[in-house]
Image (cartoon, rainbow, N blue to C red; front, top):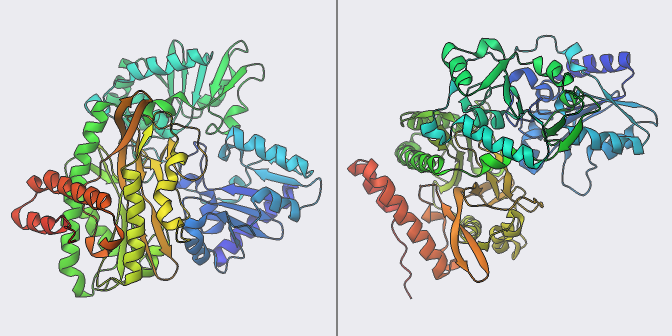
Length: 596
């Protein structure tokens, strides 16, 4: 913690020299990424908090770290002794960052931010709100002055993602993007999101953890497409591929000068929710700006048939790996040697033996007993619990296969579950099934379906603090938009081909956590005189622990869903298993027969 204190002191010295009274440091990068290269981990460096969501704010006399309910317990542990106060977002008593700054600073004082780390929309909103409190927003990279031992940017070569996996060549995707640009009356489209670039150019890499993306920018014009990327990352093969697809290559940071050269008669399309403010400031002031959701963001959210065929292959491979892992877990549980860290390594080992496995899709969340209540818990050798044949265990994990991306959570009883554990788990299961069975008209938004996953809990005054479903990429980011299922309003309608998670949960602090997560795809249901109706096809293939279910709480329709799901899991996975494994899976998938 002395290290964090020293860093805060260095930053405050730099702030004083520049006449800055407060500094806002988000946990992102110039590409609005969730997982970021070490070079850009400014918030981690200044605060020590390494969760995926959070923003540090440092004034000359105080400091706070804002994060959401997923990280309250995790952040409290990491911030202890740093002098940085945990600010719990979403609670009535917690001021948001800008109102808090208004209470800390005097009129006329300056708030510094690195404009590369804020989107155009966020920067504009922040500037406007601060001005209402007579505070000035200043674009300044203060950490560049004090973070002297910063890691370098990754220069790993990337690879071509074959069309036998992607389903469409870059030339075809560029045609679709240009058609969208034409609708928006735009001549130039600036792309900064790494997953958008990876999808559009059919390239993948390993520049950041878990997401197989490549650090780059791109410009698409009516007759030209340019990829801005460090030349060290190119090989003869990738250079030839890009040339064959009609893509020009330029150095990574050359985009700043290129933007300055855009003729003022041109209209520029940007996604202001993603493009960083520093890049935006390079666009000539006379250019017309079309600020709307990236057409690539929308196009890649709807998976094609080749992509979905791959996803189904990946789900079966994941199910086989998980079958072998949970068999191993049961066989070794009584050894007293299994920790949250060691089982994570074993799960990786089982997945890695599957064909086309590339890596994990996110850091495994292995939460035993009380650790399961920490929604995005990450075990370390110091914090890891030893598993015992008692209580319950939550495992949230996923794999990146060339075929597709997986993400699954299962909660299992390691001993005899309590009545409360079974009740809580069954409430979560009821919500999961209600969403899985939903039939809804075309044009429905995820926020309209969210209550299906929560109602059984709400009826008893219970709830969970995270979203119910996030979009998922195809051998890309495990968290992908624009679609979602959550209480917050999201104007994106659910369309056939979109892939999402279905993951209601229940968390009792210092006791245990429960979450049941499958991935689903939106598919057509039926067409009636009232229009087209849609439904979800469940993609994930692994049994749900029946020892944790109070079947008296389930109606016949819910039991039918569970039995049918388990039958499908067994039918698809069993041919890929040996006899001993099939016998284990058969028991886990055995149908529940209600005795009247």
